[in-house]
Length: 128
Image (cartoon, rainbow, N blue to C red; front, side, top):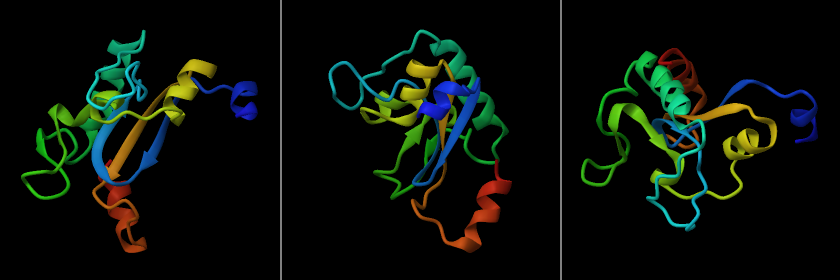
């Protein structure tokens, strides 16, 4: 963390597995509850960044169910979501980066498997 404050980035993405969506700040919400859209002061820019990534991805931008059974899988309009609107997370990396270093960071959920097998990694990377 100290290194990030000493050498701040302007733009960053952290890569996760477990869904297929571009997630932007804030992940934390004032109420501590899931499903509460929590806009940052740069919300419009974050939406544009997330949408740009999702639209360039092979499948992320398509609206509809993602991972899981069709009745309970994640569904995201245009393949993007505000973090807190999806689920509340206090102390997440993208919020910390934005608040403490002014870095515009989004989280890319690259695929449905939280821990993909080695033979899946090339396709996940190529889909971006």
